[in-house]
Length: 484
Ligand code: NAP
Image 1 (cartoon, rainbow, N blue to C red):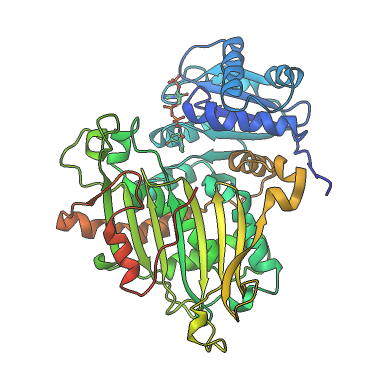
Image 2 (image 1 turned 135 degrees about the horizontal axis):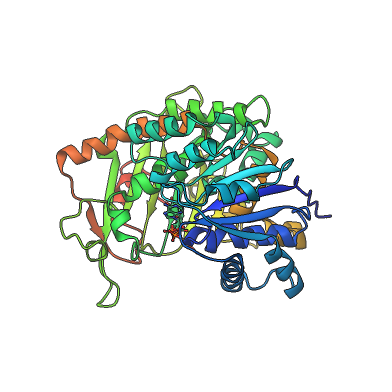
């Protein structure tokens, strides 16, 4: 298979917060990989902008160090040197007037102009405003904003209003890096590019759907931020909700940004409110003296914030009535693993008798590790001894099926930044989607906060609280193994 890298138009990309953690770990190494793949035209430039004083040389060294640390294998020393030549640095204060004229002077006419807001959301409004007052943004300018997009519906609306005061919705790219994953897009290809799955993709044939995003890390290092947020706000309202939308949405008329996002929005609006008995919230316990528990990590012995959440959702529409969707996400779990599983119903009648056991087709979509899909089908166990059945996976691991091409699959940030330059918003959240997700999440959060519910404890390195297992067991179902 021949790899097809299509260069994007020449661009000036300004990264506000260019010296920050996200820029160093993800954005700049990602841009470097796109450069190595030949996707950046010769005259494209990347401009780091932050409050501290640095020379362009110092910024280039910082990026060289970041690449050496986070992506030591890509490219050659020559490529690295060439990439660093594309970088500039400008000292700009989002909240003051210092530096803005320098930034304006750096902008080149006739190129795509994009501004990545890799800074605290409290600075989004100020950045949007100053880009305009200093004449740096025009109708074609794009801005990229990072999560968290609001803390609740009111704050998300306020953020949307701040951005809308200066930019049209078609210029705003709200990033959710889960949507940039290769498998997530493949999910749409599998659903809407094949005849095989779509006819079965409904409550008549699907027993239930499970979405798991399990992490092994705790909240150490970002305890103060996390304790104000929790798994519901940090993961469910955005990442898991987006995955749910792609799994449950109706086929859009075309693969176009508004058509796809219209369908996702309908799913969020069709979500029923979740009763508290269908929610399990947990906090991880310490694992020995060296591995503190959640309460020690956030330095708040009375914290009622969850580091784990599991819940059962219902989508009230014709397609999904009667088929629950179970979500689960947490920290300090057994393995780092993100997976969607579509569990089909059993055959209506087994011609092989009771001894053959119960079997179901399951389509699993793995986001990490080893992005890929498995379709479990039931076959005869090989060998003599009668008709014994066994479920085996038809493995669709991309690395194997696509050969060397799969190695150049861009990571989520790279792909999404290239989409910004191309002006393709399909994989970005629209303002009304974000607001609808908060409108769904807010009453649920309020209901446990009003009751003063405290999350239940769970062992570090486990699959979460026992109560989460019971949530499934009481429906005669069970979670899939969390496996690395
Ligand atoms: P960070 O490490 O604290 O970096 C913040 C950046 O913002 C620094 O470059 C800082 O520059 C700059 N900055 C702060 N105040 C400024 C001002 N008044 N004017 C101009 N620049 C200013 O933060 P981060 O972890 O990179 O996160 C950035 C954003 O991405 C946040 O919204 C965060 O929630 C989001 N995010 C981060 C991650 C992650 O993995 N880190 C993941 C998802 C989302 P100075 O040091 O010079 O002030």
